Length: 143
Image 1: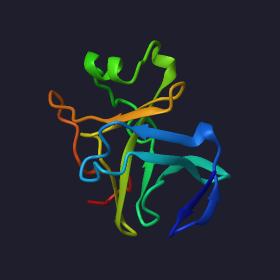
Image 2 (image 1 turned 180 degrees about the vertical axis):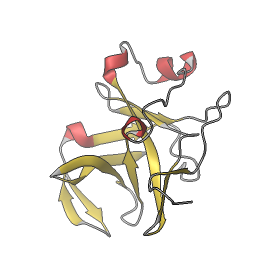
Image 3 (image 1 turned 135 degrees about the vertical axis):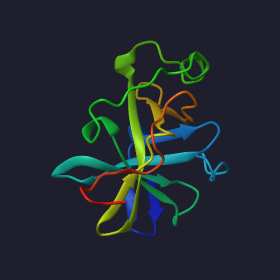
């Protein structure tokens, strides 16, 4: 499938790269289908969620555990059921990365994205019972 992207031009994506958010991403609820792309072929740290319906809409994401090894939370049962998660190994967790300036790069740890890799279904959740920040600095000395 060819996907249009303002940042990357035309991208050929496989069915395995297509992700569906039944409820969308907070603030972008009408955009429910995305392509999961690796940002840099040599560095698998960062990925991009490129909207299939809006060439201008893309999110940089990364696994929070790479930056905050102690990051943990309990996945609500309703989300496990919604995403049809059978095994923890079927899931992948991402945080949305925001780049405000060269020295101000943060990740939202309060509202992670949960992906069922086998079903290509995802949901963004808000962690109510944790103290995880919305803006966790990824750069030493950043905001």
